[in-house]
Length: 103
Image 1 (tube, helix red, strand yellow):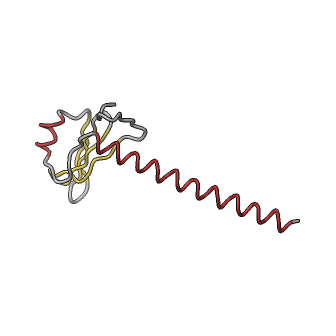
Image 2 (image 1 turned 90 degrees about the vertical axis):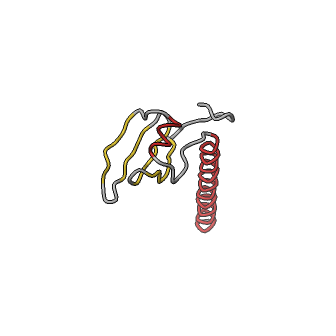
Image 3 (image 1 turned 30 degrees about the horizontal axis):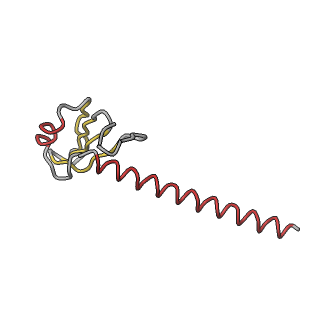
């Protein structure tokens, strides 16, 4: 009897961990699709390009480190710069974008 309980417990926990992994993959894929619809700054763009196309950021953070990394926050995303070049853009957690790219 103990062997059956142990086997069922092992099967149940294994299936739960696999289900969690699949759910995480689906959420990550959906976030990537949302970011593609938002027309975010491309890696390698300049600060001037970002400001011209997206306007003034809601908040700017002073550069830190060496090389200096700067962050600009917009309403639903942030952009990180090395010197004056875009490294990457990050969506705020939980942002939902419709198919047209609007929030």
